[in-house]
Length: 127
Image (cartoon, rainbow, N blue to C red; front, side, top):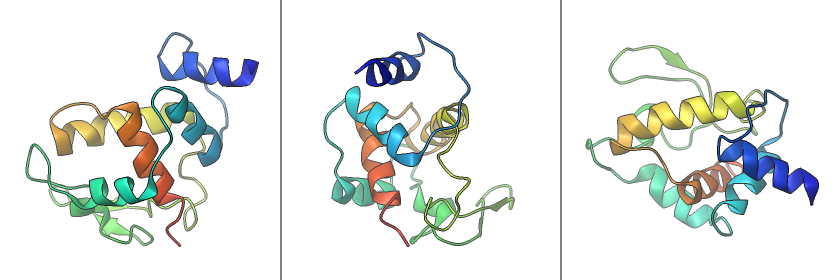
C-alpha cells in the first residue's frame, strides 16, 4: 500500500524521484491515477491520428519492435516495446519526459494517465 501511494505521489509530480522501475510498476502508477488499462484501447490510441495529424505510429511504426526514424528529424528511435528493448520504461523520469514530449507532438497536449496506461499496457504485449 505504501509503495502504491508513493507511486501515485511520484506520478502526480508531488515527489521527485529517480529510481529504477519496471514497465509493470509504471503501469500500476498510471492505473492508480486513472482506471484499469486496456491494451485494445492502447493499440487504437497508438495508431490513431490526433491533434497534429500524427499518430504514435508515425515515428514508432506498428509494431514498435524495431529501430525506426523520426519523421521530421530522421533520428533513429530504438524499439518502443519493452519486450524487444529492455531499456524502455525502466526509469520513471525518462518515461515522464518522453510521454510529455511525444504526447505534445502527437496530441498538441499532454497525455492523460489513462492514455499512458492504455498505451503502456499494449506496448507490454508487443513482441
